[in-house]
Length: 393
Image (cartoon, rainbow, N blue to C red; front, side, top):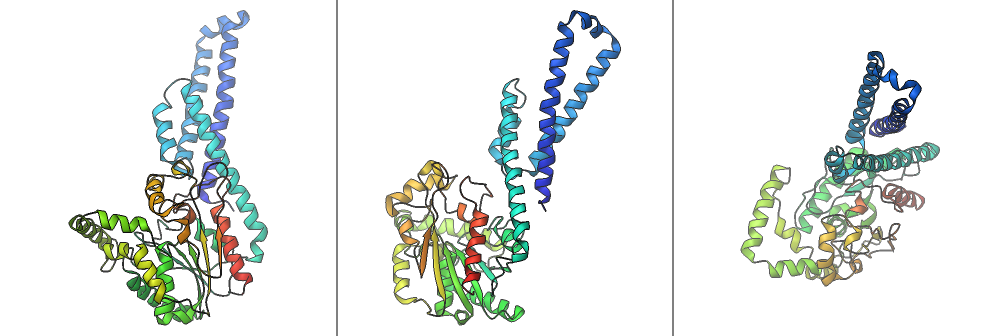
């Protein structure tokens, strides 16, 4: 079954399509009446003008009903296209080009979601994501798990539709790796105790991968981990982070940290530590940690990475940071160099999307909820979890 917002978007799109068809027919009809000598006099009659007025009002209602429905329901129009529509929708002729742009985006969105719904319906009984152990999603730095603004975008819902049992790390947005590992330890033990699942499969993004590796190696949670999949994790650190800490004066760093910590505490963090989190992402700290944090032979480790094709191949702000990161870490996803991604028994690099579109640090967790041509992020995770199921995890 299609999500509610897609059903609404479908209705809005059809109303706008009908508006174009009926509006064109009405305009051509009026022109024909005005030019045809047989009917030109009819236009002066009150009844005819009332009919024309009623038709125009009806067109007005159909248009605004359609545009409001797609504006409130579409996930792909984005702020930029909505603003363009609001600013130029009043300009004659230009508004037609804007309307066609909106229709193109919404048609593609509805078409894709219908195809995905059909695919999920076809394989529903197989429960391809029903792994032996539940999935624990571990977020990266400077974010928290949120029910209403999910860090992982549309991915968890897609996994659950295909049989997965999903849990979240629920740890601080900013803490030292060791502190985050202890938070994850408590969370994992709680999940095991409450569900009787014995173990969990961790899928961790960015710093979450470092937190999870440390939780496995340095806490009692290690024996309860079946597998760890790290997504765009800086296992060897970010020289970009080293540079920032070296260049920004200590007093300025502290001001930034204090402000962040205050906000994070209000949003749910317990004793957040901005600077400790950043320091633990430096190449120096990561390389030192790798010397003492060893993989558990009883855990299956694998890793995933992605890369931007250039600054213009991603969205703000990662397209802005791309060149700066490239100066220190080479090819990167907008935040982390690709050389830092590989870890464990297997590593895969997500190929670039269609055309020049790269896959950024945010794209791999569906942060922008964007349908990227050539890369279906939701299906990527379904296949990832399906592989864990096939391996017996």
